[in-house]
Length: 435
View 1: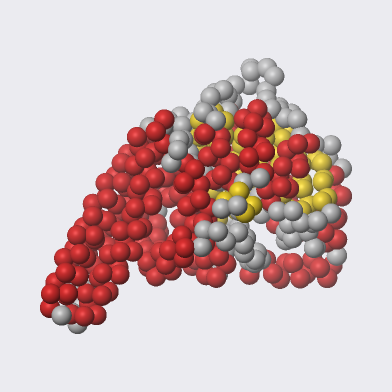
View 2: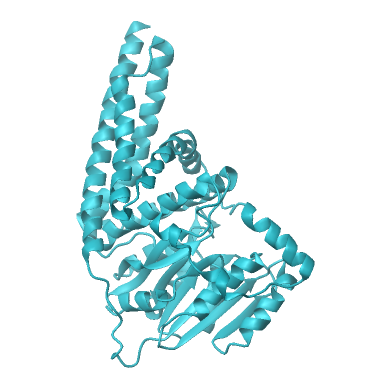
């Protein structure tokens, strides 16, 4: 028994040390490159450029809460873009379509808006494709129906596409309901780190690996070249529908074009307010990440070496952490000894290190609350990723849950039979931006 305990102890020390070294090195390099993106002056769209590229905004909608949809459409209608802007709202067979009809009728009066009602639910990806094939703009922008964008988002993202080598670009994602629960506060910080550390660092090398679905823009020529592959993604002989944003980004990169991140193009989207819907979302994302990482590996040799480090860091670090947790628990159980104090100190230090860049960039000590996300990561997300890896062939999307804060609004709207399209409902909460 003593020999087994010693082996477990040695194994734990080796794996955990490797995890700490990898994580510190990876985060240090990531922050270094992310800082380059934030130091760069955002390009202003050249108003003398004639003509400005035309932009088609695609908004798939399925069972959306009326008030949320109104806010989304208003934010698009109020864009300060001086070029041609067309908006295609695709109702993907919503069961509450009758409730949304007044909204479609109101925005249908705007000549820029086209409402496309699909008879049956075909899924977000196919709903997008229906509108893409009908539209003709130089650039195609995809926005989720629960997302609100700031007035300059189209202009800023179109500016990023001025370089013909860029095939896609994304803006900064925020949680519009960040003040709803403790979980949404953490998710808002999680989004900030994903955008302003991970994507910002990738953008330096023109290879953002996932242009997030709530707000991303694509060059039409590049999009049409990969549209068939995008629409009919197959994994292990079965159609794969979720993770559409990551898959489309990888297809764009595979075609030889660059992808970019624009921090000043801010979009706020509704995030899960409860643990169960959050974990369902994380499971879906984990499966799509694993699937498309297999596709991304093929293009890594022609990208900068940092992207290889990035893929290794994102996939190997959780594996090492999981193995170290298993060996550590086995060691503590068999030896009846408390966890080594240095390992607890190291985990605490890593959590604080992860928060430091965000706290410094946002000038908010509240960002150190994100250290509590580490507990969720170890106790819930890490086992979830293992489950996702073991069930990659599962193509279930998972049920969509309306946030608790919006349930009363939905019931009230059902009773009244209409929704007021008040423009004041669209503003992005500035507290969300500042955390």
